[in-house]
Each structure stands twice: as C-alpha cells, then as structure tokens.
Length: 265
Image (tube, rainbow, N blue to C red; front, side, top):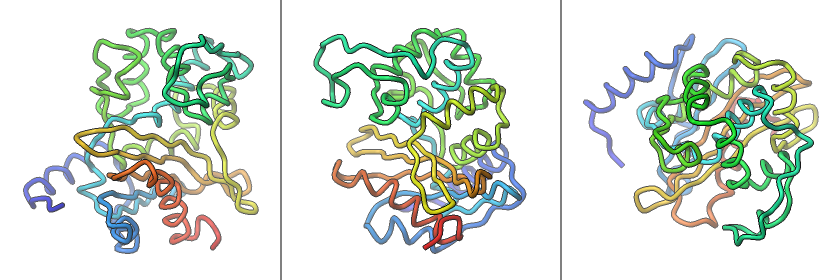
C-alpha cells in the first residue's frame, strides 16, 4: 500500500495535534514485523516514563478504524465506575445461538472479557445508555468521540474510530491511572484483562477484530508492567486475510516489546 505524501503530511499533522508526546520516531525494526508476514499493518510503542513514541509507520499508524472489542476496556471502566456492574455479576446465557460456542454459557465479567463476548458488553453498553456513553467517550478522549445513535454497535460498525497511535496513548493513560476513574475501577479492570507473564514482567491487553472493506482488521492493545510498574504501552493493527492469522496480533506486540527490551528475549 502506497500513501501519497500529501496524505502523509496531513495524517502526521493530525496525529501530532491530537496525541502530544515528548518525541516520536519511526523504527524500521517495527516496520519489518508486518512486512515479514506480508501484511499491511502498524505497531506503536509508547514509553510511559518519558512519553517517547516509536511507530512502524507514523502515517499508517495515524489512520483510524473501529476499535472492535478493544473498546471493552473503556466499556468496562465506564460501567464499573458508574456502578452498573461488578466483577461478581453473572451474565446469564439466554439460550440463543451465538457467534462463538464460548459465548453460549453464563459468564462473569472477567470470563466475558477473556472470550470477548460481544453480547455481554452490549448489555453493559445498553445499561450505560446513549447519553451517558457519549459523555464518557468525550471525557476520556477516545478516538473521534463519535458513537452515533445505536449504543450497542458503535464500536463494531462505527461511527467510533480510533488510530493505533491514539490506542497506545489511551492504554498508557489507563495503565498510569490518568483517566477520570477511581482506583477501585482501575484495579478491577486489571483483574479483568487477559495477562501474560514473563518472569517479573506482565503484559495486560485486549484483542479485537472486525471485517471491514473486504478484509479482517485485527487489533491488540495493552501495556507492560515490570514489578508492578507500567513501562510501555503497545498497539498493533493488522489487515489480516484469514482468521487463522489472528494470533499474529499478540505475537507482533510481543516481538515489538522485545525489540525495545520491555519484555526479555
């Protein structure tokens, strides 16, 4: 995919206006990760100590897409903060056929996050309601702020869109507790998120994917903690050809984090 210099300049301008950081650079080592798999995609790393950002391709990483199930991070925080659900709640299966067999059972909030159960988080969004959801999305400065008029589909079909650069910035603010949520809500979210451990390092994150314009858009967003201290946030967006390629989202995030030493080899 070739992007004209005119488009690149305007995307770069928008990126730096929307997501300020101390310093941003492109790194060819990150660019090689999707290229090695013959995929179009990008990787963003954000150093949470000095807010230095590293992109595989800044123009590409500034393009917005629907967040798909990565929005479950924000959805859960909003619902927890609003007292509309809890970690202990059981969401009963209504015995209707679901897209995935793993969704066809009663689920806790954590289980629903682990299997990315869309119906559970649609129920949570309906509880929040359109007016409150619109205000929260604006308050946390999530993507383009646009949720339209259907409260339980906007992160899947649009109009909500977010770029990988914005995703990395958002997850960094989640990791550092720099959003308008209580300590209790942040702590609960950490217990909900799927976590990988690498010695004293853990990677917390959320996947997402959605068909868009004839291919699969795959997401992985998250952050790294070393001995309990957040160090880097990460966002990966890939144009995938088949569902069999979905594990590349996490694999590419791990590979990128190893490049900068956030995860040990």
